Length: 321
Image 1 (cartoon, rainbow, N blue to C red):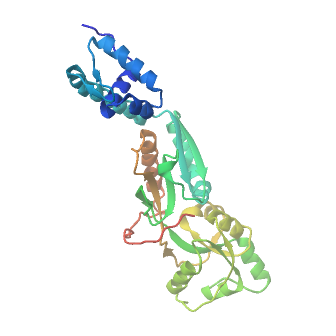
Image 2 (image 1 turned 180 degrees about the vertical axis):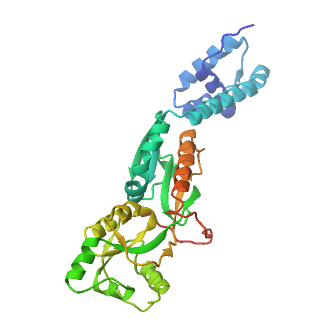
Image 3 (image 1 turned 90 degrees about the vertical axis):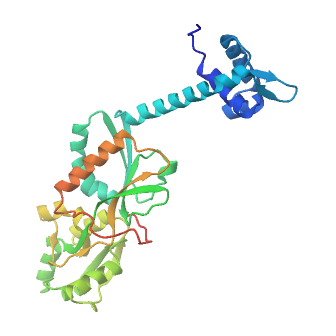
């Protein structure tokens, strides 16, 4: 019994030529020359000890031996490919590529990320902060963390957490207003200051908050808008105005006194944080490990970032900020 196995390329040439019944089409399929396909088939036939094709003048046909051999070759190549994919997906070595919002990265994820790296030192994390909604199906990213309504084309979304919104400002601003015999003691006092919006806390969110606070007709000076929520918070810290902040992003500033929460009234954000993966490929073991770790971190911050409690599936709006 001949136990010397033929080269993988010879088997691939045989399978492709059997599929197309053409050495020319097999060559195109495998990106090699027709002569190379013919040589691989001849070598394989010599090793098998029997002809696998009948060469007609303008076409090929499989011999009886070729027909019998084909299912074994196809099954073996499929099993090998499946095994390679499984080993690759189950590996925890190598890079884990993550796309996430700059605000979420800088104010929530990065301060906690050292815990993940300490627990899983074999996983290299490549974190790309971006406001752009990356095409996961056509990129090298394993996953993305997005702030929106959870419906992204060709992707699977898993709800991570929702958020609350409430007005904050810096003690610097309060002190400057005090010196000018002004205050921010009640919602109508907000008309005296600049309102700092990020692109998601625009008039709509402020109007919702004002209704909840009992002042639906109040008009605010929203004359500073910033695309990045983190920069809007930085502007508030520097005393430039009041921003309607996400609770998940201002925990540290509230704790260290850089920001002050102005009023007890808060509203639930229309949007939530979602972990997003591409539908066209399996989730790698590295990404699954990170997902579990991320969920554990969110549970620890349950008071700051309450779990999603509303139905998002019927909404058609998408965002990322």
